[in-house]
Amino acid sequence: MPRPSHPDRRLGGMKILHTSDWHLGRTLHKVDLHEHQSAFLDWLVDLVEAEQVDVVVIPGDVYDRAVPAVSSVTLLDRALARLADTGATVVLTSGNHDSPERLGFGRSLMRAGIHLLTDVPGIEHPVSVEDEHGEVLFFGLPYLEPDRARTELAGEGEEPLARSHEAVTRAALDRVRERAADRPGARTVVLAHTFVTGGEASDSERDLSVGGVDSVPAGVLGGIDYLALGHLHGCQDLTRSVGAPAWYSGSPVAFSFSERHHRKSVLFVELGVPGTAAQVRRIETPVPRRLTELRGTLEEILTRRDEHAGDWLKAVVTDPARPAHLQERLREAYPHLLLTEYAPEGRDASAGTPVVRREQNPLEVMDEFLAHVTGGDPTEAEHDVLERAYSAVRRQQEAS
Image (cartoon, helix red, strand yellow):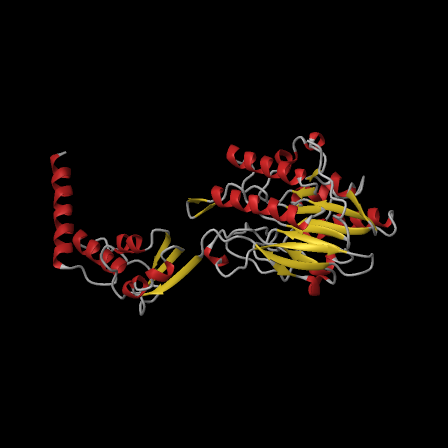
């Protein structure tokens, strides 16, 4: 199919759409997100067409694991094909969740407009796209695992670089700046999958620590017309600390309750005349279902069902004694309950489980454990159940 032509596509400068961290194949506390991720990609394709985007940049973590499910591979294949059909150029790098070899397989055979920059040598071969103001060079920095990249980025015959994210990122950007210097007047966009110092993390990102250090100082990243960052799941602007336009687009959907207050977004970036600052606009993505955390006694939480029955819910129950049929009552009121945490008020959260003494009666041990779990002494009926269970086990042991 021929790529569509949009004669007015570049009026006013180059239009770039920055999105990242799709994590295709991810679940949210065992809930399959495939349907919601597919809906996001449909929305994204429509947005690229409506805004007449020139280039879509995706800095890593397209998949959630190195060996993705067939359904995730099919979803990505379909999305890239549809994006290419809009007439936009797509530039994609690998993240720490992706396998660069698997994600980059077949890149030489990719259809026009799709560029997979997933290896270290590719850093020196930018994708060039032109508008009425000249050339824009798109450099892709895949996730640079220090143990591997420190050798790949060292000069021929030189010792490996220091084993740190800062060292390998600095070396990669030195290569970018050298190549950009060969093209005077060209504007530069760098896709980088990394944790920049000053960024705000959430619970759902995989730790990148090497030697206790997991981030790259912001000052390493300056001198770029636009830095498209991937890895952190919250949309955030690091322009001030980097000294040049630098943003995380964040993930398009939430992957943990720590992200419940995020405004999930993609970023619409406009590059104008060389030497002028990139203009960045946030566009919020569709929310498949709100994430809500409710804290209080069971009865207090149940009174809010009308407001939150349709939400993905984390319930933190604070009754002094564990309510009977807790999970069943919550599930009846909140069909999308994902997490239940029992945190009784007034109880020392640091208190450990009861210490079992060798001479203790087993029934006493069971009573103490039940009291520890529920926050109250066992009732007569509960103690009777434990006693009958213990007697049955004893009879079975004696019979054998």
